[in-house]
Image 1 (cartoon, rainbow, N blue to C red):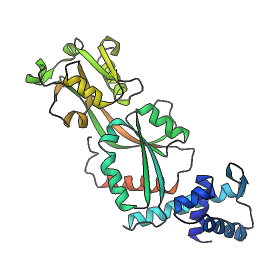
Image 2 (cartoon, rainbow, N blue to C red; image 1 turned 135 degrees about the vertical axis):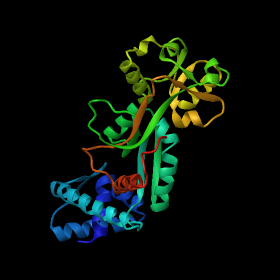
Image 3 (cartoon, rainbow, N blue to C red; image 1 turned 180 degrees about the horizontal axis):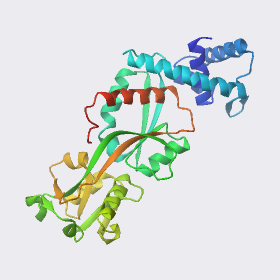
Length: 302
């Protein structure tokens, strides 16, 4: 049994197609078919059932896939930790991410990952935390980066960064000069918030409730589903808002204001399914992120 046979077999199992597996591996379909056939001949079992919509693992195939995942994951970890580029790592890494990590953390992280694994490609869907987590849970994304998870989530989650949520105002707002305010004054201001389902919104609402303030008591004048729209509305004095520290720091059109005794902070989580086997490129990315975290003296604020 050769590693290339297990690699081709795993790719077919994950793509549910010999053609798509060949495309992902950058080889011909005939080569993939031949390698799977060699495995079936050696093991004297049928690994796949072919049908018009693709292929499905047989019971022996499912058992072999479980072992193949462990073998290839160990190979990925060993080659990554020893500083080599695993030749087996290729294919598309499907990522769903909320706005803050998509704008701040992922560009540099994915650039480093691509430098290490040049045969990998990535697709990135930017949405809010709830939708990103749901995409991972449904199998529409391999991994997700979110600022919050529902309490009943079954996803595996790892903290990769922390994010301060800062109050921002227009540069000509009365608070902009003294750069500080109170929760009482905050409750009297027109307020701009992210949409329902946003991790940052849930974080702020929980922080307010801990202070004995109902989020419904805020004078909400606008909801928006992205940080740029909120930033621009704040700059035009539509209202004040809490933004990720990264979003708040990228422009001279708004200023951050300290709220006495109130500093919402959340963790940015990398999530993946516990129930579904990850493709090799996703396993390599998880190992890559684990190694990247060890180079950080502290989990970085975004």
